[in-house]
Image 1 (cartoon, rainbow over the protein chains, first blue to last red):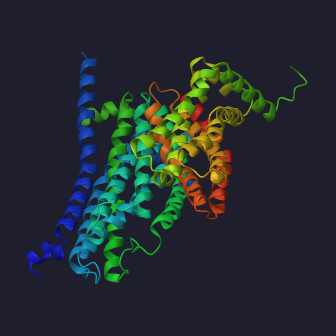
Image 2 (image 1 turned 180 degrees about the vertical axis):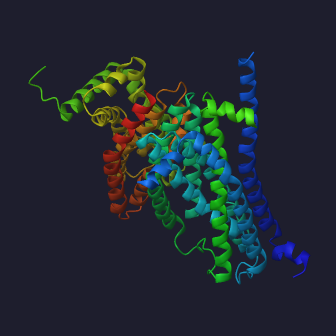
Image 3 (image 1 turned 45 degrees about the horizontal axis):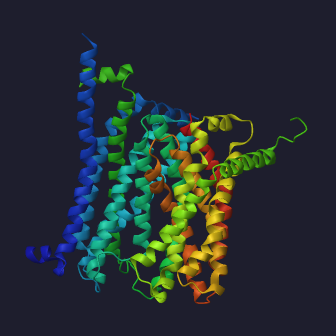
Length: 54
Length: 247
Length: 229
């Protein structure tokens, strides 16, 4: 099974690899969203705190 | 009684924040390992299907994400019910954090289903019974998320969207069987069913491993989301300030 | 008012009569769902073709979907006016079971919209080249289906009554839940045109009606308690 044969997926390369690509993208988005939310939340809380304490 | 006391301690926001934080790395590691094994078995070890050749390998993403879309909806409705009945805030947070994750799995199932159907049937979208009820499930998810976003006050939003999730879960089987019935009416059972090929053990193993991997992934991402929802909700309490000083 | 047995039945009849009276006072508002139904049905021949064979082929779906949309757009009237003048909060706080009050309000809403839609549907069906002797099943399915649409719709209205622009959101919440009713209703009418047996669909429509009669009032009252808190 040469590498190129593997990537060709018996002629269905486009369908198989797009599916796996989109799957990876969606899993990634699910991971990135909470991380982005974390940064934004912490930055906001720190800003509110710094404003409160003179 | 001891078990409940342990569980109750777990549900205080501060405790949950700390425990979830410690669990996430382990869950993430387990997800990566399981995904690696599943992908290796699915893409390299499993033989090509005698009928569909290599294109059936999309099944290893499509079927687990379809299972997950339903599983996450059940978890969401269950958590919403717990939240409404016993008024546990954390349960509401878990329910509302699950909604987007479930919606993403449903969307993934639809896209991979269409990509898998194209080589087999020559059309990007086929009104197949399972794909159609998956599409309606996506509408249910969007409804819950839209309702949650429509309220300013978080508590009302959680409880209103929770009720909708419970109403939805009652309707999921009704919709599923009415769509099945509708499908046999129009397409007739003769059309080649959207069946996974005959499950040969070497194909079943990656399928199950990928499903477990997706479930552990769901747990990881759910805890990540819920953690920051809880912190956001408990902004005014002092343990949040302590946390801010530490990090 | 003593001597009046203040149990659930009186609560139901009082609310029902009150809402019917209120609806009759604004008679012009009664026409709106009907006008919408007529207009939407007549859009299809304009948009498609006047050939009676194609019209008949789409008639069941057109009639059912238009009735469904007309009902959905008129759902706001169940709670909106009571919410605005504050009487909804009084109803929620009354000692009568809230689900019975909700049932009364939904029954009144059905009588002022679903029932009227069903009554004028034969006339519209004729305009879509519907064979007159086959109108029975159409009316039957609408009679069984429209109350279910009002009952399920009341949950959505209760959830969005507090929101300023609940309209589109209401559609997003409710339409997926309308799908089973549409499937069985439209297919019953479609198959009745070809003289096939439609008992199965009618039983299922009746089952959905009974199911929503027993379950939705509780969901609606829970939703009201949440959104009015």
